[in-house]
Length: 204
Length: 206
Image 1 (cartoon, chains in turn brown, red):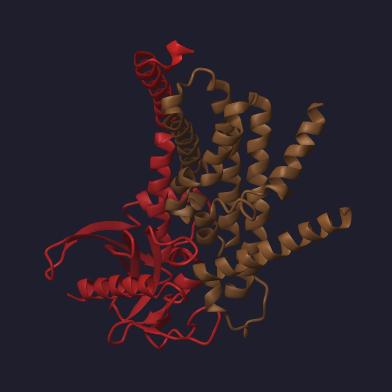
Image 2: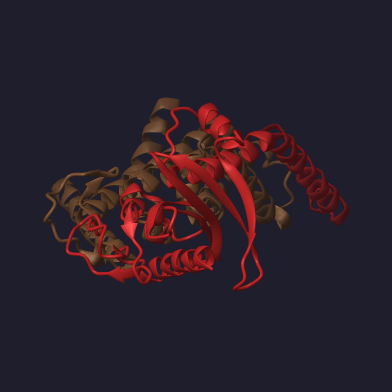
């Protein structure tokens, strides 16, 4: 029973109801961080961590939270975990903390986290909420990482900071700036939707 | 159900939960505060050593060299130009007397604090490094990357440093042209760096 529920969650978060390319959530960070693969990876890991644990905590406390202050308490829980991530990065991974700068704090504003807390954790048990939050983060990650990979490669000719393209490669300036992320997401949505429409067509 | 939605419960609940989370955060903060302070000190120390091309292999070695007064002499210089005080470090490295200055300037979003090291006659830059900055990650934030900083290594000063457009992917490698290549997509940040470096040159020359 539990296994099948997890399978449904995997399908939902990664594909059918993917937070980024279906629900179009978390777009601000998608536009901002994806010109650098390393920053994107850390951002995605942080979002996954925060979504999983805030979902877990919201679910644990849900029967005590008054309806009126529900969202404020959710925000409190989310910022609690984001501050922990920030402190841990500052103390144990200072270089990464420097590279991400203000973006760590901005994890708080990622709509995916609040969305999952409100849509899932408020109505489900703690463990399954944790799994849902974790999978949502993975759903976010699988959209961001390919976009970051292509953007970093075309804009700087590098992957994870290592030079890959030849020295005389002319960088595409547009890939560095936010508009290219819009194009990339549009293409991503186009491909993903085409695949899912084709699948539906097959079933008929 | 009614009790849960009452005003008193809401106030008490909100108070307790905020209090509990803040206590935990305060605890984590006090546990890591020292480490974070050491990290930020180390960033400054390493930046000064990097700019002056002083080798070190471990954090401890960097710390030891920085604190060794016989090797690295620290002075405070009051600038005649603007009456501000600047930290100056002097050392004898690779058969040269090297002087470095810590200077802070306005970046695009926040302040940029950086070290610039010079040779004895302020004819060339020995190296630069960034101590702190809040530029856009992935764009202006790239001023901390090695290829960007390496552009200034052994750069001739001439009449001051200029910004140039290089056709190479990784910056301007000619160290005699007194120029560096800006970061694509972060021209404003590059301009601020240019300003801070030229300001440091003026302060050192006067």
